Image 1 (cartoon, rainbow, N blue to C red):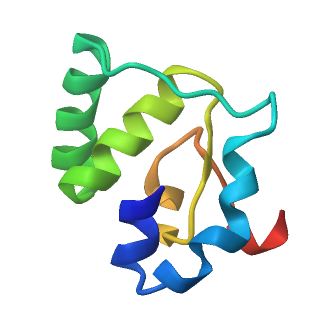
Image 2 (cartoon, rainbow, N blue to C red):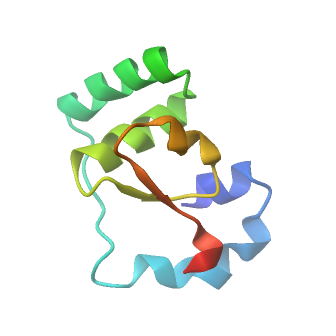
Length: 87
């Protein structure tokens, strides 16, 4: 989460949304070979960045939802993007 906030020049807001890591419905997932291969596919077919492709692949592998400022995730079919400021 910190890398994403830093990339959007919003690192000063990180503590404001640190509670996002606490709710029981937020789950951290391991990187699997399936997610790694899916990220390569997404990167090549949707022109996503390296980081975006991994995040999208991980989200698609589980609940098909991602919390992000980045509209690039809207390119991924089946992926629902939730804006952090709406939480």
